[in-house]
Length: 509
Image (cartoon, rainbow, N blue to C red):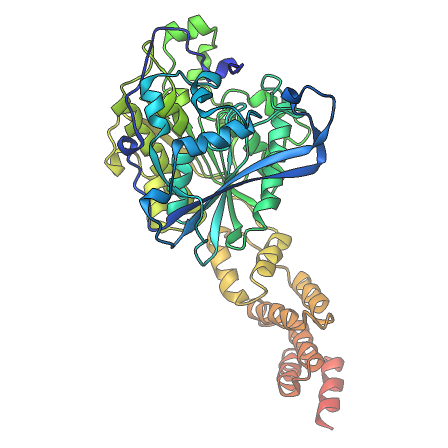
């Protein structure tokens, strides 16, 4: 069986050579954590699926193979580490050829059965299958593979990110009804977006997952589906595109009933392949405008957005399996050392982008906003452009959601910090008074109502009505001395306040 793919994956028809790479030569610098790996199969019972090579008409709940890389503080021995062949067992299962003999892997699937590729199968990775999870809460990355690819296609990148304190979860790219996609259609995109959403729910079962810090990483076709998933899931806080099809198939996304560019209000970074040579464009009948046209990036207005073109990387080499196993096309591919250097930089940029926008790392943010030359990267290696989100207004409802996320604590500090980014922020007196009372009269949120009134009286120190409401709030929770203090303040501001007079008389008797 050979893979039927779409033209955007640049099928190699020219003169081929074979790479001489290794994981050691890629040489990603892992972080402080050991890397645990777990793989299992669950199912999405809301969708049906057919295993095509079972040759029957039976439909089953959609199986979702799940691969998870996670940080660990265990100290395993090197002999316990996974090999590349162990990862290929996952690929066999996801391709529905679980019982295929190992010696047939390179004959059966996508890569040539060469001595070099057979040697790759024995290479040792940095992941281990039986490790406990490190204590703490770690940001979550959902990896969306390329067209009809395995969850493990970028295992070196996933291991690298997990070693730096991220939980990475992935499932294979599959069609809506069976293993095969329809050719990159909207239906295919929707199927993968729903798989991403399934993983959003699945990762919530992981105790160490920080569900307030979630990003998606999409390679090739996965870089289209992950944008669609973000458009309808506010949980996704950042987007990484590894030469994602959002650059090549933006029209497919626009045709989705869920398309809404207004919802793409999170940081976005895109890593693009080198310019495709004229010889390849002509042979593969590829529109030459794809080298430079990027309408989605141009349309973004609510995102801090970055676009980097790596001049030594063809499309296939944004994945680990591509770097290791993919034959080199003499028409366009660079040397192995150049490919590996760029893959390493893509991995490093991905980490720094995620550190900046999920972990709030100031130094990482400086790195991402620097030009490559400012980061001591040779200009011939990568081209860079970026743009900042247009300044947005923040509504009262938006501020209330921020306050709720902080459990209505330290609201004055929150207001001051928010004002730095939204200088036109307005919190109307009447809205604050209404919200405070709504929270106050619910016994479970009374203290939150008091905190709203404390913010309100800070913002409107001359409002007799707000001090009257704050007095009522303290009276409601039984803090009579503070109630008296605020009713007196209300009378000072407005001596005709009969309610304050009545309450003071009641409290002093």
